[in-house]
Amino acid sequence: MIKYIQTETGYFNALPGYSENNIQKQKPFYHTSTKNDLESFVFEETKLKESGFLEKLITDKTKSHKSSVLALLQEIELRENLNIHLLNNIADDISRQTIYMNNLANIKTQYSFELANSISKTKTKVENNILDLEKEKRKEYLECWRDLMFLKKYLLISLKDYWDLVKRQETLSV
Image (cartoon, rainbow, N blue to C red):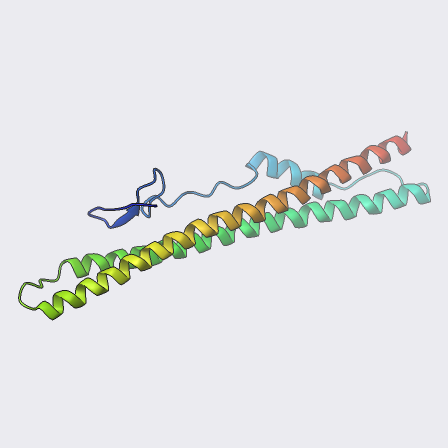
């Protein structure tokens, strides 16, 4: 069971490093140097002479694998951007709910039992909304991780196929 702690700024999950105020900075799958290396080989033109049918076939397959790698890199970047967008929207919703909760806490209910009862029910609903949003946030983290693992797997397969073809092409050019 996850415990939520109420602070001056609102509710947050009691697990370390996981709070609404600590919007995690997304770390991209590839570092800048890796991204530059991958993009450099995708965009670089092969300057080997296509003397025969076999060399032309390998060159075409190489271009195809380059396109696959580039498409996978773009899909990874798109999924990471989508993840950041969704998590920011969830964080905004949690912030709004927390502000609403704080406003409810500031209402003086000492004169009316019906008002106190109504505010109590509303607070419970808002707390449930916050819990649901935290659950949605955890679900998005998991879905993003699954999607990225799937894309990374195919990226590595495409890179392996590309490098195999480059080695064959180098062997034929010698």
